[in-house]
Image 1 (cartoon, helix red, strand yellow):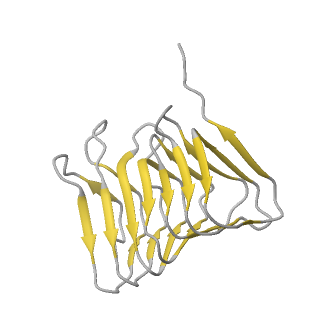
Image 2 (cartoon, one colour):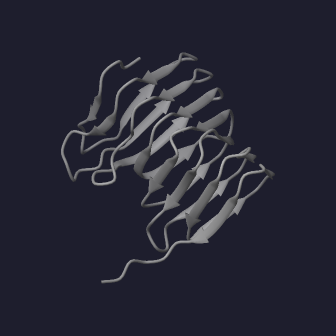
Length: 173
């Protein structure tokens, strides 16, 4: 467990944390050590839970690719700003932070539960911003907005709250 803020500082290689069926938790924020140099993070825990309580990246300085691999539960309590987000095909991802923004794809291989209202899932780069769900998506009474070039559902979507699906648009100056 990481009780303080974490800085990702390896520009040449992704930071990879691996346990054998043990939980990994981040109580503080996770950011790049060098501003403007996105750092990738992969967490592999077997059946252990992965929990991020603090914000991951920021709108001004997103981290690199974020890969979460567990047959347990990934919990995102705060906001996420990353180059991409990928979860493996087993387990559950719980999004409680209200916002996940990536410049690239968001690929949810497992079941996803939305635990905050409103929640926005946004992929911003034209041509590279598909948001896909291989498992179920349960948003309950929570308002959910999903924005991307492509939005793919391979399984059931359930919920009574408003669900808005919208295409991403390229910014122009």
